Image (cartoon, rainbow, N blue to C red; front, side, top):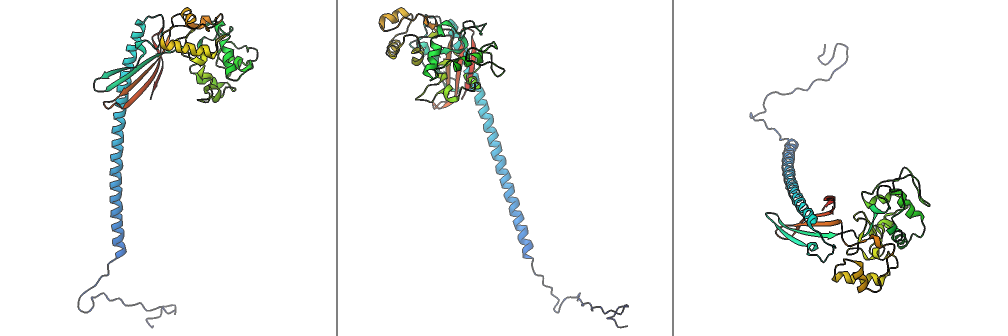
Length: 335
């Protein structure tokens, strides 16, 4: 049988002979695999880049964490300093007994207090009670479904007229929103969406569909809003030494010329009684109905504390509201 044939009669190709011995001369030459070497080099470079990137990212992470810890430590120290200063101010307020609270008092002028290892504290205290008191709108504090307080029966509707609301519907809805009963006033609305409690913040009035942000906060500097006339930080009486001019203009028989005269007078002297005011300002009207909501002292105070470093750069700012009669902090805001 021919070696090129298989048993089945089919021919199969002759296999090529492969020489296993070296060529003549005894030397064997291998061609280098350049693609394989290049792949290894690229892999090493990528690994190095990843290691450098990881090390850099970790360094930035550590730096960020250290900075965050330092900032938190500084914030805690600043908060502690502000709290201690606030406690001292409240102690001083309890000892302060005067016939009037006016910005003429040195106590209400800015003070710079040096702090060991922390710079300087710029402390300023200002008496409030300068707007219509939303917490004391009703004649009875415990029975708020009663009528609006007698002294505010003229000021309250006059405010809405200044805001462009000439009907009784929206003022009544606001009263229904915060009183305790469930019976709506004439033109008002009561229901499950009403708060029927004191406001925690004036922004809660936005829960009334008719109260828009523009109506609540106005459009400074051309148009005033509800928040420019009303406040949560006022007792039953409005301090005439601190009252906002546009709020004083709401009082009965008051005009802007008289308001400007009052502002000029209190810029020079503190007001301790209406008799002196009438004597100095002949145009001051006879306040028969609103006389009872005028006061000369404040129960609410705005305390501002600004912490400065050694280079007088601001590091922390605190805006605080205090209630003198109860010795309480009502609001604490940090910036």
